[in-house]
Image 1 (cartoon, one colour):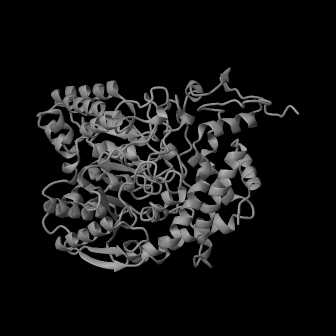
Image 2: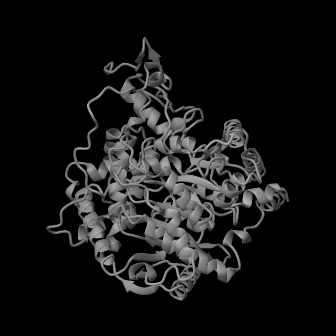
Length: 98
Length: 531
């Protein structure tokens, strides 16, 4: 019995923007099945009426003073860019050709 | 002093010798650099770094010139009579998922090969401020995801007790470096045990500080509600001294606590003194004592540690954390969900590698997908896909939502336990170091190794792993973990130093005195391979 189908993994891989071949999808589906089966036990815990915790030490509205600080220079921000032009990141076409 | 004598000094002993003018920082730093050179081994395949080396392979980058320049600067300042930090001139290594200016940071991933950070992590800035020479960047599982360091894109790190075994993970590089005397101190990061489990299986000390008590600014994020930076060392006192350098509030980290640094080293000294544990209530976690899959020798050494604690004056009680059995599932859901979000930025647009699709139109979406396919290893992809699944519409309540509620239950379990005892104790890892390759194809078996360490990350409480001896069946190190309530890191150091002192008195010296010579292990292995 397989809870996670290959098509489902293909959909998730597309959402996560990771190209995967047929073989990789099959392997990932089989592995995820085992892992999801193991982690699904969280639903069996006595969690009725228990509030969720997102963060071990609760904090809220952590703000700094609204003053100008020095950040990275444009050169520093671009120094690791795969492609840059005129002080900007350069990327391939955004829109599909077809 | 000989090279061997210099590298075997603890950080505290080295600092004392530096202050007394008995050795210079340059001599000390050079000794470590030479020892690194003779224990790292030769590349097994010069064209393919992922094959690793014939030796430890604990460093991804050695910063020889920079380390020596810092050391010479400290020596000159000392000669001039300047005020220096107590650890000034004592060398340190940094895990390669913590960013450093002027030397590479890869997180052991192809994705960041060649990337240079334009800024220093706060903890690195603190090391520089204390003027500790940075020896280099240590190996890890890619993006700190793994329990064996086998998931490094640049080859596995090896365990200095047995080069055919894993050094733990993800911080296997830092732990092996410290255990094998390549560095007296190292920085690590701990999301599910990545400092403590490597410390346990290499016979060294590793600390997960209270969540938020050490800045994470400049730590490459894996799972932000769980990640924490902390010290690796060979002694409890050394870990405490490094922790004092690293701790404190950082306005650049929004989760940073506004607490002052605690008296960690002073508490370690008190714990190690005669009767230092008198009156301390130590709780044995029942669920981890009889955990499934616990190795006989781990169990035996752990029970002997309990005897040593009793003999040192501690009161040992049994406590129960009934929801612990749900924590592994909750951890893998929360961690992978946060991973899927944190790793979304590696898309070949602003930094890191960019890979073009092999055929078809070159659109940005297809470039992102090809970049991520080429840049991430299978374990990173598995976690990203699992996290995407756990967060997706229709499954959220069942997985991520339920996991967050389990997190509350685990925190309540800890609170309840700390109503009865001062610290908790358990084995750090259910087994000693396993052979390289044994679990790499079985992700679930690998995950089970973290059963005792991950509840700590879910609750954000501080924890330490200290050596508990060698398992009789294979002669490999066993770790003992102490856990304290949030913000009680100082108490951890007291308990751990108490056990360390008691066990070392029994053994007649530190456990790492029994470590085989790494050079001999490398030549035996190289000769064996030639036959």
